[in-house]
Image (cartoon, rainbow, N blue to C red):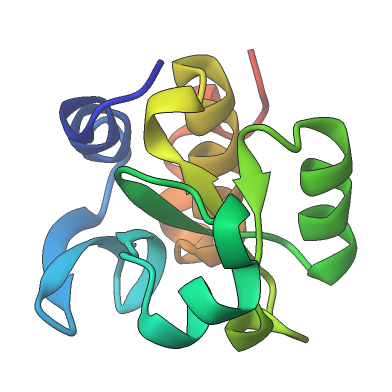
Length: 131
């Protein structure tokens, strides 16, 4: 299961990425677009999720669209979830300690391919498709 070091390693393996901060928390991006970010649950999130609110570290992950987000939640509800804050946004939240590293890598690479400048992606054909 994933750790913050795994997130660092997965993103650092991709060209034109960097670790940054967003709202005082860890964030990883390609150029200026966030790929993944640390996303502690806020009071409104806890109120919305109620007693089933996850404990521990939470990772925000940009998805292609809301449908992909919903598919992830349906496929792995013990890993992925959302809150009303993300209604209509292409992003999913993940319980970091429950997130398999290979799934993390797949999601980060897919978003990197969509978000990175075309010439960066084209310069790295080994990263254009999933292994």
